[in-house]
Length: 492
Image (tube, rainbow, N blue to C red):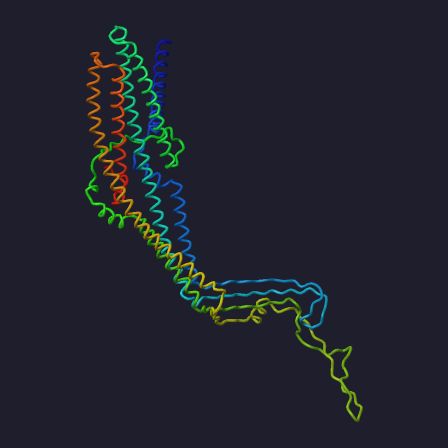
């Protein structure tokens, strides 16, 4: 019975262990997949466009341009302001009821509404609104240009990683070949077939190859760091890119003429569009500045009222203490002329809204301002805007020249890079044949170790040169395609 229970318990425990092991294996697999994520060029570009700091700053400029547009639209609306006050006057004040100076505390409440609107302002408000719309277009072009620049930088960094990764493979392959050659030479030295000096040469070559592997790995890490910084990633050591296969083949764009590519770039690229938008903004600035020469007509309206809290006179009664007051004497008779005396009857102040309604007043009209002499401020502003306009014209012409030069330069560089790649491929084939021939001669003792190492080193350099020229051509071709309107992430 005990043995049966023990066996059953063992089976149950084994099920728990297997279940826990399965969960741990699953979690470890998920962790490995998370760490082993490899980024494609499309993912890198998309992530950079979303997180790059320069793009975020330029996007804020676009938001500011939209705020300026709202401000320009607001200039068409009237300016309305309401003010109110409540005051206490303590001390010697004139009694508004009796007109006498008395030591008392009086209170007053007043309110006022003011409104004014530009009826005519030299069309400056209209032109400012049009300028704000042009500024938004300019800001959007600037944002597009920044996004394009970041995309190019990311693509260049991505291809640099691929080059460094393949270069590591080449260097490690050469190191493995040299280590095998070292073992082979060790056996020949032990057998007395080759001198010991050949073994030392091979040993030095192995050490040199190890150093090249280290340098290639360092270059690979640095290239990953550069791309990770463009993407605003912190954990660059676990960052890696997908092993995408890029072929160094002729792009269809390269069969176009440079002039055709330039004309296409004038339609596609934002550099010239940005310069044109800035030119239109400068033209509006001149128009706005000239508007200050014209008269300015303003319509205004104001409403005001006040409320007092002092007692008011509600009636008059005869003064029983001093019924009459003499005012003179009749000539001839000497009769004294008197007038009756009255005393004011005071009451509480009128209700608040009654006083507010009784004391209200309106003021409205038109105000015309005609500029005659303002210390040449208007003239100087117009001249400054004209200078800025000339700068914009020069910037537009310069952007067209730069675009044309960049297109021709990119086209020439791409052709040169393709020729370099083809030459490197031919050189690699020759170096590989020479290395194979040297390997055969070295195996039969017809070549010393130094000459064999030279042949092998030239073959290794030829392999690296093919990789370098390949990715250099791919990137330069992408620049030409970029000017032609082809997305940077499209594979050749």
